Amino acid sequence: MTMKQKKNNKLIKSLPADNLLSVVGVGLRTKHYDEILNKPDNIGWLEVHPENYFGGGINLYYLEKARELYEISFHGVGLSLGSDKLVCKNHLTQIKELIDRFEPFSFSEHLSWSASGNAHLNDLLPLPYNKEVVNRLCSNINYVQDFLNMEILIENPSTYISFGENEMKEWEVINELSSKTGCKILLDINNIYVQSQNHGFSQFDYIDNINHDNIYELHLAGYSEFSFPDKKQKILIDTHSKKVHDPVWELFSYAMKKFGCTIPTLIEWDDDIPSLDILSAEAAKAEKIIINKSCP
Image 1 (tube, rainbow, N blue to C red):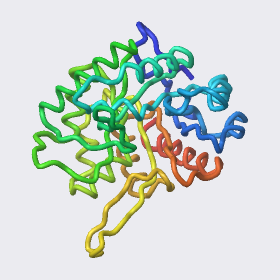
Image 2: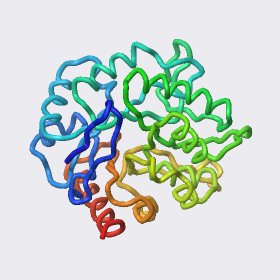
Image 3: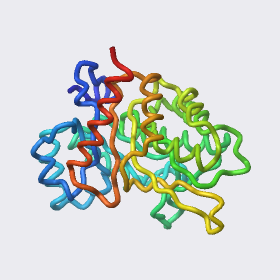
């Protein structure tokens, strides 16, 4: 597998079509540290949240061991790209130290905000989609890319409210950010479906209108369904605590017909974490769809 940063440390999508078993990855979690070092079937690469390794210790030891066997990606959760101030330099410095040490094939962050001044929230909060926010996001994305000396990926969020002052569709915001900054796209298929049900739009329209050429990674996960007190409405929450649901597999199949078969795809599972066998089976299901739907 060749998923490296090349040419001036710029991200290059380079999974070869003849190496399909390497396309699907899983998140590296403490529960699976020892098992993952035995290279189970159907797991081609690993994703980690770099913030989990700022403190060193046993987590860093296992990351070193895992990196000897797997390509990895870094998926940030704390930069707060949507904040009205520049990203925290100290936070970025720690991420860059890990990037220089472990050479992940990509670094991604969320299209959201989670910090204001000295307040840091344990949530990825939504943004209004207008020109002012796009300009703010561009400033922070450019700052991060210049600091890290690499193109980053931005991920579409799961949201549970929308703003009356929205001037753009979410995919229009993402396409514009990618065009203006050169960043790439991490497209979360589960998040698209969750939003389509919560906000009432076509999930297939989203796939049709996102810039396919700039998609460098895909995420799959399981959502949870909750009812409002009156039982007349429901809301989907992106809990990452279940198997991928059938409507999300259907949307993934649709996306594969559009995007092709060489985009690294991740099975996300962050709560009620199951055995590695279950994760591996989810990865195998994704591989089967990738091969059957998108490749000759």
